[in-house]
Length: 193
Image 1 (cartoon, rainbow, N blue to C red):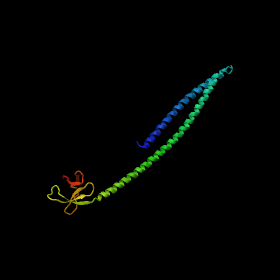
Image 2: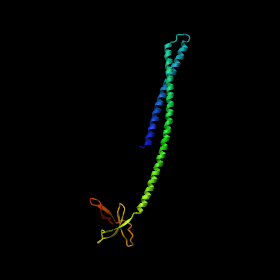
Image 3: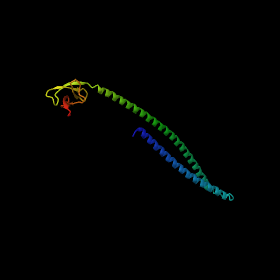
Image 4: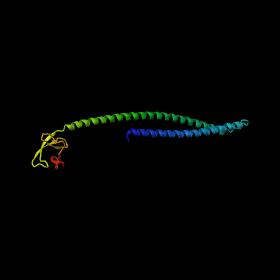
């Protein structure tokens, strides 16, 4: 997995986690607000019924007001968290844009590398066309005495028969193979026709 993909996956998971937490807080806040509305409705109803009779239960009302203040503080915290999450989302969007830019740079570099490899291969192929032929005096598989063959001076050391016109055959007739303990001795290995 590439670093860019890992980074992108990590950002997506972080955003999803933050969004889930935000949704949970919002659900909790909505439930608390509903409860607070119910309590306020109760207080208003209670005060309306007790207005004529001045006997209001002060401690209970003070507790209800304190709970309402706590809910207000919780609402402010959720609003601050939402702002922080929005800032985080902006940072993540910028990070994703940077990842896209990095991916584009990587793609351009890969294209340049491929072009370099193609150029190198083309130059190597050009060098392969320039393989030198060296004359070797060898006894062929059907020869009674030694005769001349062309051998390539590359690592393949392919053998070509010399035609009457002095040109090498189109297909190799064999190759020189390294033998012995030191692999410095060469022996002809002939191809079957």
